[in-house]
Amino acid sequence: MSESTPVLSRRRLLQGIGAAWMLTISRDGLAASSHVVAIRIWPSSTYTRVTLESTVPLKYKQFFLSNPDRLVIDIEHAQLNHVLKGVSKLVRSDDPFIEEARVGQFNHNTVRIVFQVKRSVAPKIFTLAPVAGIRHRLVVDLYAQTEVAHDDPLLALLKDYNQGDLEKTQPVSAPLPGKAGRDRPIVIMIDPGHGGEDPGAHGKYKTREKDIVLKIGRRLKALIDKEPKMRAYMTRNEDVFIPLKVRVAKARKQRADLFVSIHADAFTSRAARGSSVFALSTRGATSAAARFLAQSQNEADLIGGVSMSGDRYLDHTMLDMVQRQTITDSLKLGKEVLARMGKINHLHKRTVDQAGFAVLKAPDIPSILVETAFISNVAEERKLRTTRYQQQVAEAILAGIKAWVASGAAHK
Image (tube, rainbow, N blue to C red; front, side, top):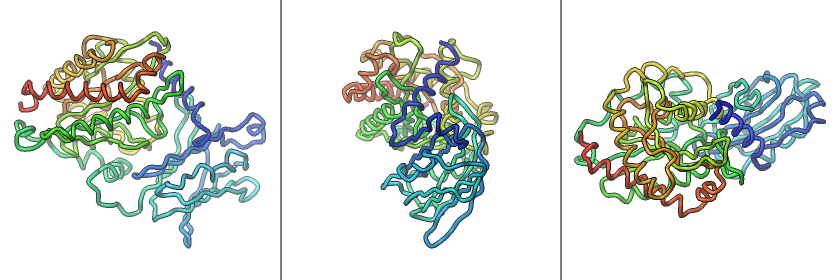
């Protein structure tokens, strides 16, 4: 496996995203001096993200107007082109934050974009350097001005993350040993990989990893919630980008006993096939494949686009706190899940692999990453698209969890 593989696959996917979400510029348009080459809008119940991709870093100014409420962004040294003109077509009627978008040439070298909003918003605007085939980006995240009380702590965690306070708000310890499954249900955090601006890998027939793993995650949650002594939460339950560190933080905030991240692998050769299970390693990867996979998965924050504020979380302090017992439990859990995955699909490797996956770094929660199949393999892509295989994967993961619980590991 080469290091360029994840980058190439993401580049191809981002180039092929549907017209409903992306407008791309022609060479003639580029020659007309405007540098904006794509606009994408990703609405969700948590926040709406707008990204403007350009050949050079964009300089901008922002301000608010009222009656009605509008966020105005002036892009300097830019000329109106058909990409910018198409921004209004990208606003969905069910977007919780944006009512409509307008654009115009404000003066000879300034393009003005106006977002009329449905509610009071607290925008977070930042720029990102090129990564994985994506050029310079101006990112506009629109959050609700007033935090809405909700059982899901995601909004508060994202706010803490953006302010660099994520580590300060985390619980100091995990649930007390011996309590899970006795005095309270076992709590499982399901993590469908990627989302929003980060599509993950894709197959020959344009199947997107982020869509498939979300469907599997929802099926797994439905199964778990039917278990009398279990309860499931999801890091994301819609097409939204969530930073890796926030996913881990949400698991700790919900006092999860287990963390299961769901993915669908890709490789340069379409012959590669099979399911795999991974756990964290703090001493280096156990194989070259695991190392390369961890590098590509850890790239998600750069692909999805996050501000650098708060990125110290887990990079140093939390990594130092990872307990040997947690990794041991993760390996046992992974072994049980892998055995069940082997009953529904070929196994790419018959042992649990390890590497430095950022999303598995909760110091006190046994955590595994399940690669359900190779989405780059045509036959396995077809399987991944079927409700039958998605259900089988969910059932296999649950069976592995139940076997791990039955072994007494959850009560130690």
